[in-house]
Image (cartoon, rainbow, N blue to C red; front, side, top):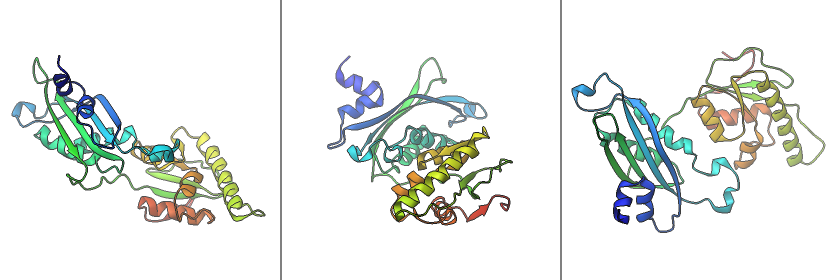
Length: 271
């Protein structure tokens, strides 16, 4: 098999390698992601589930050493599967072409993504595999941003536990008694650490809860029906103009603003 044939019929990452963008050397790939959905233009495809198989290669801008080991600085694998799942759930589609366009556009909403190679296959339509492959580049497609669940933000007063798990989507913000006596940054750091200790205490008593420290973890928890318990240090200290020295109420309100929540409730008073 020639190199050209391999690039066409192999995984999309091979085509990406053959058509590499100048200055973009990093790629993220997804192989053989299968979902059973109702899709297709023919009558025999209505009211019946059939498998779709997705293979994706995403060329990404390398964050370099600045990323360190920060999950929020890279393009998460979850963003690829979430783009697929979001468009599949949005509406029933007749054409793979439409589905492919929408998925590629949604992936390209991610700031690190530069170009998408996407293949969608129908393995159940006969003794063969039908498929479609497209290539789309940032700036050449448009799509509205996906809106995730908007959570209720609930402040948990210092020293207080959570006996009853609130209905989601919810982010619990554990407060801590303010540390004083040092410089402002040290006081803020120590207060945040106390808040995080409270977060672990709260989550330890409930299987439905996860302690989250990054926006990526938070988005995942909310989309998967988990109760997020916020460990604030990383998001606060990594975000310019965040209220690192503020009270727990100010920090909870900042988080609410970041997530588009209406406001902040206090445990026991939450509606």
